[in-house]
Image (cartoon, rainbow, N blue to C red; front, side, top):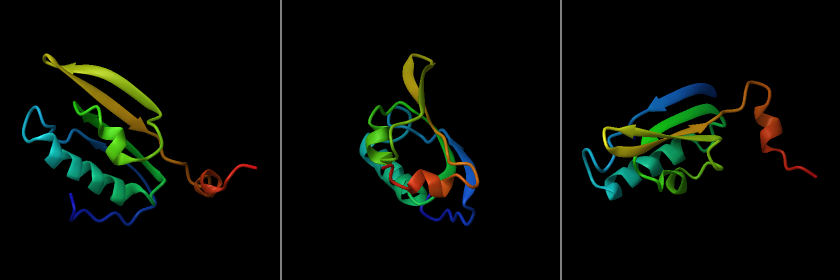
Length: 100
């Protein structure tokens, strides 16, 4: 993940990273989420969709609250599908301007 280079201002990322209950512990996954935050914090034109059992994902990703959260089940494991909608071309500057 750290080696991924995104040179486009707009796009879509859909990911089902291995979450703690399946592969590793949550501490390791939090590092993945922090890396995602760093990668996409200046890419407001990207929509990001993440499926994870870690309910703390939004705390680590730190993009405003998710636009939508869907609760799903992977077998008997409850997972959330976090949806963050990116700005459309031409709307990115408006999204960054403070409202008066």
